[in-house]
Length: 358
Image (cartoon, rainbow, N blue to C red; front, side, top):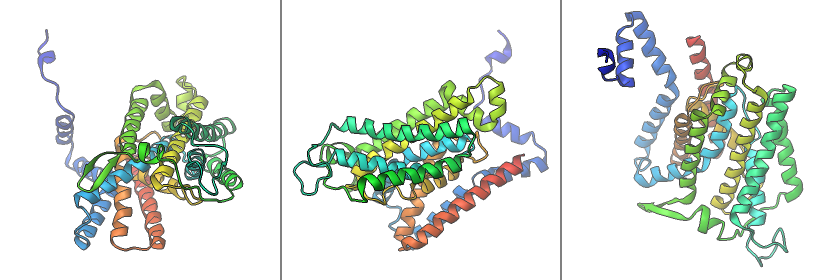
């Protein structure tokens, strides 16, 4: 046996240190600059969090952090769906309205019996898992339509999903007449989605938190351990090269958008129970928050770049910002300005990273 084979393998950190030490002084400066540039948005948010903590010392107390984590779990599924579309060098603007429609469907089939003004008068609460499946299926079908139009007609995802966003919202308004659906059955809310698993201080960690972690684990396997995941990154990096390599590009695009739609449908099912009602505003601008979280977490609009861990971190940091603005007493109107600025800055940094590496 050779001497080389007996040598212990170096860890990733040790390897990177060796690579850094082998660089010239000029390249070392560029390496450090690139490292900070890659994480610039995270550093900006950390500085904001420090400022908020100084202004409001209760901001980072355990109960507040647990609350942020539970909100992260609620918004993580939609971000995972949007992330796949961004990895394809696209986006999905229909996500929020799909959440709203699936939340409405979940609510009307899981309203309590015998209440005044029940939306479906002669229909009692249906089995929870059947309604969950229906919500996911509705989202998947709209995602399938998005993916088909992008893959077969070569229409940019921005235009396709903007169109289906309006179509989906129009369908919701036509069916619901903008009516709020409340008085949801306990089998849906307190017995399933918001059922406390355990408590940290005075804050409960609910079922949907565990479900979000399971979903993230499944998506990690899909992205990193399956041929489909490898094809998704290949198409996002270079569609033509992927096609030449034998990747079924059309199928991959359709499958990614369909999977994304299923994530949105699931999010709608969770949100209606979590909020206790379905309203016309449920899902509004959810896609903007998801896009911002993805870009903060390192999912690049140039395509082919992204990690599940980055998406989770991005959603957490986004919720940290939103909660921080609430702690500072910033109005909802100003919140829109700050969210928009975060998206713009994150995209500028993302493009800057791409041009620097290119």
